[in-house]
Image (tube, rainbow, N blue to C red; front, side):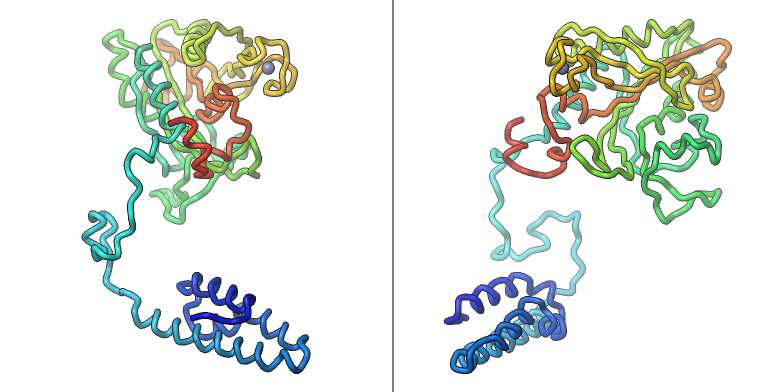
Length: 350
Ligand SMILES: [Zn+2]
């Protein structure tokens, strides 16, 4: 269908594209696009009004016909979303697929595999964290008692379904929610004088105001190491070794006191800025240092809750954001690029 008036033609093409949203006749009558055309009609001189009005009416009738035929053509058969594409769609309706060469792995997955590989070579086993978890693993097993104010720092999303105690399931705000499972399932290693050494990586969620440094969904890696006589020195050496391997250069670091309920003492691991060698640049806000991750010695209560004798064994734990590591490595200025799906960003990592 073609309309002489370019405005009406444009409205026609726009509404035609939104046809699946306009489910009934009222949606068309009330559509702001159509309403604007009728408003414009009132402002026209009488000689122009007749032809314009005729075309707008023709547009409305055409849309009403299209919606009623669209509705009667909707395929109501259930679709098996796990089936191969051609089982659900007639061959002549299949879209042209992009060739496999056009695609590439997501930069976060490339980097995460590289990170896990470094830890693997350092003797750490890798696990994937849960994307829905319960209150006990998110908080209770990590020494956050019910009603503890530190829970507020981990503000995330709740799922409607509840656990046995009637508490809502949670989209975890940190991968430390895996610690109790890791420690409990590997506690027997300690009896044979083997250490527990594992990293858990996966997606975590926060109720955040979004900006260049904050996302509601991001990746984290949590690590634990438990054995005899583990000290803060072991923790620092482990993190330094990993970071120097990841950034492929020697780095200076310092620690600042911090607080997490599940570690005691707790530290902020602060790295000399790898971009300016500590001279001060825009990435480190001219300070020469970057607060990179939280860490500490595992709290005795966390070990006890996993059935480990906290008098006999000690350990350290840390948690770090994968995006932050990658942003620093490639000088990426905005965390939102990762989830934005912009091809010109993604193709740089091909
Ligand atoms: Zn710097």
